[in-house]
Every structure is written in C-alpha cells, then in structure tokens.
Length: 114
Image 1 (tube, rainbow, N blue to C red):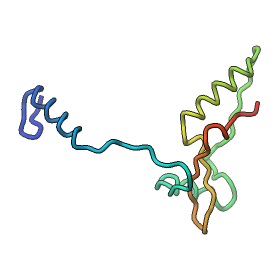
Image 2 (image 1 turned 90 degrees about the vertical axis):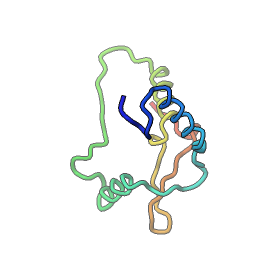
Image 3 (image 1 turned 60 degrees about the vertical axis):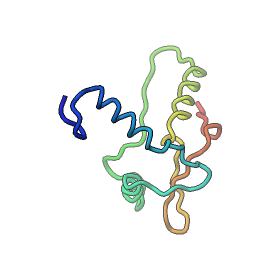
Image 4 (image 1 turned 60 degrees about the horizontal axis):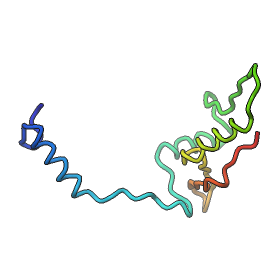
C-alpha cells in the first residue's frame, strides 16, 4: 500500500478515513417541490432539441415484438418500479421566464398506460 497522508499501515489508513468521514456533513436529498436548474449536460441536450424536435442521431422511440403471452400487469408494475426509482425518468423541462428548468414529478403521478 502506498503512502497516503504520511501514513503507511492499513490500520492508520482506516483511522484516517474514519476521521475524514466524521468531519463531512450528511448528504441530504434535494427538495423536489419546485423547479431545479439544469445540469450542464441537461442544458446541452435541451438546446440540441429546441429548433425542431429531436436532433438527428438522437433516437427516442423504441419497440419490440413479443411472440409470446404478455403479462401486462406484471410489465406495468415492473416499469412503474423502475420509474419510481429513477428521478430522470420522471423529469420534464418546462421553460420558465425564458429559461428551462427541471421538474421531477412525484412517483404517484408517473404511471404507465399499456
């Protein structure tokens, strides 16, 4: 193990890491009540989409042909669990005051219609 902060043993490293963690504040979830600013990547994608719909090379639609019996209820539940877990799948980008902002819909408002 290399030297980290002037210490060489794994025990010293463990003590150092524990001390650093004790000094860091807890990470709190961000509020989801109103609009949030876009990240740099979101701003870039938003600007690419503006003039006339999806940019070439930026596919959105996807479909799959199933050749078996589909349990629609199980599929709906699975998709709803995925959407509930990932804020990005519930995020929209309305323009407010000439600037886009992100809004994350509550889990209960984002169901799938099959």
